[in-house]
Length: 294
Length: 245
Image (tube, rainbow over all chains, first blue to last red; front, side, top):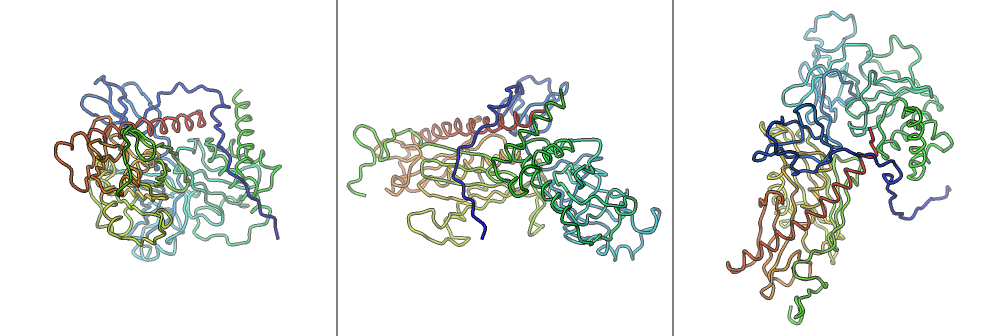
């Protein structure tokens, strides 16, 4: 029988005080007047209320020339063309799949914007439509790229590259989209022996690094071979590290994840989720990132 | 309630407050990781928890979707242990469905729903401890949760109740004062623009006194606003500092 650990309530320590106070941002809350000057353009997170520009969300004001936006701390995912997303199929319809991507409306993946087995330039026949559920069915996870954004904010996806497609064995972590840093690549093979896909929509997929690169992705056959204990441990540790980074609101990208993973090595995997351990390893990560910046 | 003095000769109420004074308000944003937005509020001994999901694709019947704006879906519930007497409240008892309707009305007035056509915003509130002013605590908690979810609103919505006892308007009634059976007004206000999102009154009140009571309630709403605004600003400041960038 394992001993049970019980902790008593402790007052939250504000990390802000220990960090350098360098916030010169203009922070607003809903209903605050940003400017009474009518020469500005109204961006996201604002509205016009009798001759005034008023904030509608809580966050930092961003000005680009004459455009004023307010960026909320966390929102649902707002799609942009070229983003890489991880999503879950919720529905199979005629000629398209509906995919849940943490956006305000479900995204669509058209049958025509997908590589089917048997060559890239292949006519989609009626048989393909009938066999759609053989490729992807409800509950399947996919990685895809945003092809277009409709006027109502809904997103159209495509998987026209061998990088994208159905995801096999691994772990999904859902975080706020604002915590994922935009980068050149969102597919990373980490040195610790696992790979991650950092979806711009805040869905993060951690999976064992595939051995043969070329024919693995893009296919619809999932590799069901058992994953070794070592790989599973690495994946679990990465998951807990990402949760720790999210709890302490540190941006997620390959370097921060690797540093956090290395900082967590002295602890047992399950201990990484303890609040005090989280705080300690994320603080160490922060320090190393600051040193890296110079 | 004979014998119980709700307002003493010196001008103190049963819990030692002055007529226009609020109970202590404590609040926190972002209490759950899973929801898009969440908040917890204590107003004296009244405690409420609110979570917001959305805007997201319509769940359930898709025919309810509105083509030009988002649908606001609210649900009010009370925990079994929230009142003095333990009581199971299955979904749909009359009081809570009325409260649900009021919440929906209040938040449709405040949220900029036209920005999210064909989607749905869910607001769930639960009373953990009931000590008067349940509707007000719910509105205040839901406001914080909506702000936490990053959903655009015209303004905060702040709510407070007011009563009228011994020719004096009393702000923010507690359970004892509510149970005494005097007139009670619940007011939800958009404080910056002084617009009323919801006004509800039970039992009768002379027309001459109405203005005074509403005045007291809106004063209390603005006091609540000051507290909520501070909570939001502290939260925003903390998170932006952590994010750095």
